Image 1: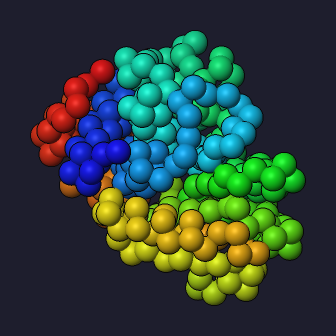
Image 2: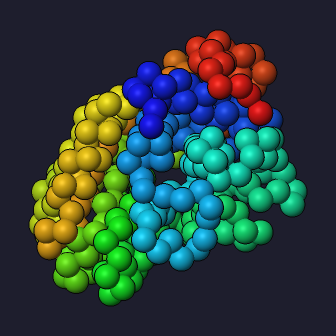
Length: 281
């Protein structure tokens, strides 16, 4: 299993993948993808009990659902780098007839993807359903989900939160990418979430908050802590503070790179900040 330095090298390469994929088609969502790199690397290379010989059932293995599907570049990169499909396929991102469309979809047998996502608000419900099924089947594995913070403005999220605690879905860890930015601006200017911890706890969830969401060792520790809190009668939520555009200086601190692609000069600058570690596709 990779050590912290090896995981950090993987994270750098994934950042290269993200900016190159989005640049190639002048289309995609680099900001949130870059901000979630450490989460995905920690999950897929350290925490998740998963099998790259993929099947949709996921029996006796941990499974993951991406709800905020617009950050597909980081998802595709991590799936390929962890062995689900060949890294060379990343070059097909958003191309006609590619399996790697702007939002993930399980059509064409895309390994590692269990649901189409992109219509925000739906992924948590799907994850809860999968976790409920595992409990009914006496499958001790854990279901993981990732949502965006702006996504929490969707009413379906709160219905799902209510259902999960009411039905004691305690084999579920739902992480919120809390970068406090969305496509139209800062969360607090669009539709404030208020005291998110208090709200989740009021819905009878166990809440873990991590302020260093772009440090791999911190994310690993938080995910392990969350695992220890499962099977105690309540679902578990992680509020993961991240920086949108992390690792590319001109993308950080602003919502403007939520869905904008770098030009040639900007790509070169991003790659200089993230030297090749594993080899580009």
